[in-house]
Length: 217
Image (cartoon, rainbow, N blue to C red; front, side, top):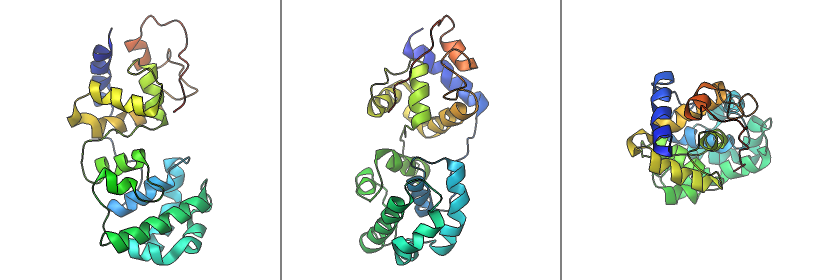
């Protein structure tokens, strides 16, 4: 079975399991999504969703978040990893949005990636989920599963993203990346499956004997 054949099976099975996957980070507009994604670095979505209600109540717009400043943001997110740096990034990006973008989240990769704390993955999430622009954000779940399913050689997150974009139609990227994340959390976890246990791993590699060692991004 080659990569394209495996990709077709994977897409079909994920469509059956998750026909309409929700966005896992709670938000109410593009700005709150951007903030939540920045906060999600090295944190679970569940933990982020626990702290954002109070943060969004205190700073629901870029100008109000800017006015909070680092010292005002930090108490709301102090339970998260890298809280001090994240508070600094949120204060900085809120100031830039207010002063340079009319308090609006920009809708280009270049402008998003110029904001403090916003890398390519974060920009991809915002572009796909807030603006419906085709993108394929690659997190640890997607990087791991793409290797296990033989869709990429796993040399880097950049290579994984490029390989997945070649294998799957652009029209499905925004939904598919969410479907893979949910599958990775529910069925093909880092410790619960070694590439030989879950249903999809067995289906795309029915004769695999040795466990797959996934390379970290």
